[in-house]
Image (cartoon, rainbow, N blue to C red; front, top):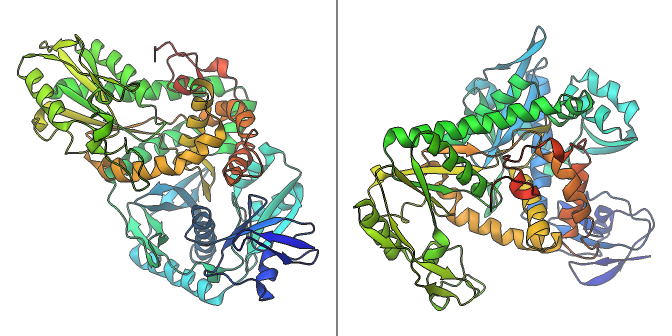
Length: 555
């Protein structure tokens, strides 16, 4: 038998039952890096995946996006092992991504509820020391696949009740899990062969918990340093508290709400939370006397609907909202900056005519009448039309665009006139206590569904373009998110149950013979966790309607 090794673009011999790890051990394959996982027929697998028939195999390093996820999962299991020994009655929760790391808390049972335990610096040092010992010992992550009913008692003994509820509500016959030195856990994806693959990490005390940091993608031998994101952390914390109040913290609890016919109330409360947040932002804008609202956020964060709902709330405060599109301030196409590949970089700040934008807004604030530009994407240049605007005393300009938080955007306009809003889908629903839901995956699913329904774009093309979108966000949006006066969390705790029906058939259209199938397959497996929620229960004003259709707003 032969397997096709994509890294070398050649076939290599293999025996039935060989794994990518055992093939490496024969010395028949020489790679310039140490692989941490692999793709087998464009599905992510761990290196011990047994091969019984011809397959395409691609080894992946820890510096790839897929490899980094595997690395972080290993650190999470090592952290859980350390917590189980140092806090034997404690329950670890890895709650969400923040500060370029992962915020963790330890809980103790107090009667019928769990309460967070304040963790001292000395205890954090002890956790770190134990994790280093595990890494140095190079202990195996043993992979198992058993009847789900057989592993539930083991999970209960370890007090992993969120996992028990997840597996009970997903009703899968078999479940894959791992053990580390006798301790069991399950993860949304593969792990490396052993703890010796995850040696670079750090723990930093923060709030009532701590941050788990992995290696720097640019320098894998160095730990990432935490990045200040206090406003983002508060937005996450507010929603985590909301989840506690409504008693839906994880997918298992969401599925139980669906089965117990409580999901309509959940939808109503979540939508009301959105409306209250937006109303509070509108009140602040009016109280400050701001005349310009800059609204920014990454792709598929729901900026357009947020703008429209904010306009409604401003009107209830007797302000008159008026919209200006940053797209109309694009420079002519032949003056657009180029990216590293030589293509037009429309996401660059300098793709905008900043001088014209600042001049127009300054004149509007001074009470002058301004003829706004109109950009033609067909001709790649601005077309001057009759589009006059004059600001009245009650007017508030709302400007949506990815550069809204960048201080260079309106460098000539007084800061006192400007109010900045950051919008992002900060997903606080967990899969279980040790597996969080990626905000990036949530946004990608939104974009896949929206682009398929309204832009006639396949899931394959959306997934293929996603890395470029992410690079633009990393360069032009995320560095400025702490400049916001308000952060609006556009995620909805029920949305993935609704999205499931729309996303699954589109993801299944991605061909198996392309690299993007890896992402499509991973998202399909992820959506299997969720019970479906009927779309007819979603109100027409919901932000989710921006992606699914049926909105009462005009887009």
